[in-house]
Length: 473
Ligand SMILES: [Zn+2]
Image 1: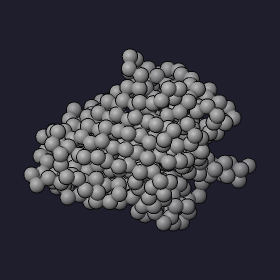
Image 2 (image 1 turned 180 degrees about the horizontal axis):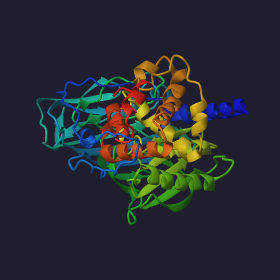
Image 3 (image 1 turned 30 degrees about the vertical axis):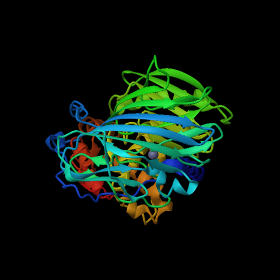
Image 4 (image 1 turned 90 degrees about the vertical axis):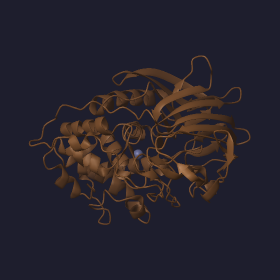
């Protein structure tokens, strides 16, 4: 029985990792921007617990009012495998910088071999053409002799074209009439208080953005007979128009979807839509996914604090071996019901509380695994799993560490992440610590020290407990 349980857990983890979760971009920390201190928050004001108990949860911090404002248009042509786009973003850096950077993730080493390609047209600032260069295929840079000043808004525009040639077990894919469009447009990799996140991606690991919370006005044009499931709130009057407030990225799935909908109370009403692309064979159909999404949204809303947006969409499209999370939108492959709650957990850990995808992978994968373990009642199985020696007590390592240890990544980060949290103490109190973490770090790019501080507000020995697992405080 034990062996069967362990095998089932491993299969589940591998399924969760096959597509997007285990595939990550490299850490990127270099910046020519002045490296100021990380933004100070009320984290430092959190009192350390003297006995393990759930404190009064601080009010959730509001998103930065000076966050980037994107206007994005995407003309999706499934038959041709192209998306023609326009992008305008009003960006206000919070520290001085000598350049603007856009990441073009479809050109990275995971998507490019499938012949995905993101091309950009003339870049303009306030309507004036400016020179831009590709530092590498994923990094478009606009330099300025005058620099870009803290607190001064920059109005940048460009056209772009995405080529989506064929099926890939990833976030950029076209399979018949179904298209997955994740990390599909030029995005600003700005970490407030730090600067540009520009390190190169590494082959095999996926291209997901470290990006600040932003607002999006998204217009999607699709051919007759197609539908789109996207991040953001659909406009009741203009089909294909979505608005997303305080999201760090947007994504969508385009296809011919049969959909089911429900309202989750998480704890405010969340309109949930689950779509199955016609012809995709899933043994249970849409209803079990809808039930799982609604139940996990409501459960996590209680455990970790309110789901932050009014909508959530979920698309099942062909030939995806697990799930890929974006704020307000999750992509999964057929017969992947078991990873649903993990992907929903990412709405809190990655979506609401961001993290550097290269530097601190456990901050979203370990915490989403904790959420999954709590919802699915899998915590004892996670705790019982042996961590391989190469990964043991290395939970806090960056993606560069895992790059040549892919076979240890899910045990080292996902399972060991949940084990590190479990070691803090009573699971209900760990949920409380994560509720503190979410409240204090909402809409930010959190660091491992932020998690340690939140845990220390609940558990007196949190720092010692977590550092023993390799957490970097
Ligand atoms: Zn994950």
